[in-house]
Length: 410
Image (cartoon, rainbow, N blue to C red):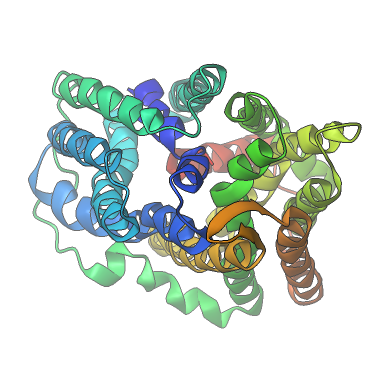
């Protein structure tokens, strides 16, 4: 289940910008397409929290969502009009994004010890993402509609398979569930704490430059002449797994604040590597920037989820995690993707009415500068929790496991 769940996303998401550029979408139109998953992340808590959690078995909802999604993403692969493509892909994202939480719920319902049992299952999702990227890259499918069609075919397989999964009854049947609770707005009271407010606002702001990578890195590598770019980009997911395993050691050495700042610094460093590297003598800078993904993602997103787990009272801990996910994966990514699309379109190179390339150095320097500004503000304003460096390894691992349960690979 986990392998197929993230194989689907990995098959089309990374390379979509290259395909849309090939069919003459401009930077803004590509960015609009990439906002669909962020909008899906905003809407999915409502679908899962207010409908699936109360009325229907998780495996049945998951099966229906994937079958509907298969039809929608296949239809999207036949569309050349930017507006219609956006509408159809948005409908697909609304079907797909809730299935991530549903897959987790199906797992948890079968487990007696999630700390021990969940991680080796969840890592199959990352492996699925990697395998999808390798297939698309090796077969040179990036500028074609085939990745979307592969995702549609695998969605049908997972949709059918979902009905064979163990029964997972609704978790909140009979409970009163409000929209504010589902979206985590109960955690807004934590914003009275200055450090938490700085963390939340910093998380939102850093997601703006982060979005440049997710939407346009594959197009950049292909325009730079890199062979099998999609396959090579999966090295980032490999480093993500590696650094996740090392995080307990880094927590002991660095503490929360330095971990968060390290994650931000590596984002800025990654963009500088892309800006000044090339596909010739300096190609190692491209590969190093890809390998930075483990630090970029784990040290900021996963550490941030652990910070929330430590700071939020138990009664609103789930709401706090939901709130941070909503403002980062949702609102932050929407704003960031729009900003990335504007910058990429501004620096596109035209020959008559044809887009012939992009001024990539200027493009990558833009999010690098954004990230540096956020880093400086965060370093000055965020206060390290007093016990941030004194958490035992087992407590840290518990936090990492809980964080991993709610993450999606990028």
